[in-house]
Image 1 (cartoon, rainbow, N blue to C red):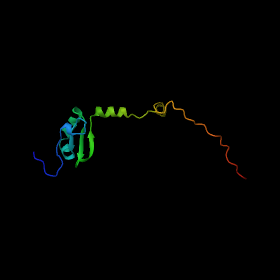
Image 2: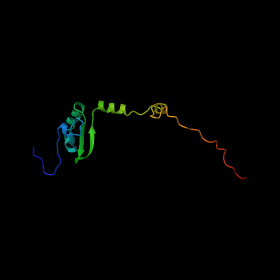
Image 3: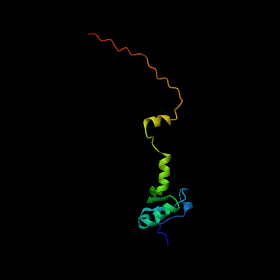
Image 4: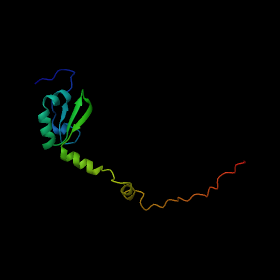
Length: 107
């Protein structure tokens, strides 16, 4: 199908034209019209990048990929776990303070 002059690509591009994710790039309108296909490809072939007017992209990924990403960026379950996993574990910090005797107040 011939492309209209001056308009961005209206369909999927080959995976090698994407941002190295192994998926496809889709225009928003095409992705909406072919949502089931985009969904299937996200599950079987990898991330599917969706743009609006060639900008403002979002990426559709499978639930399994999302789960792996969330494990990598997991939040500590407690403040104790946070400090145990801190990159500053083992660093000596001088936490001593001078005794503050308060200030003298005239009564």
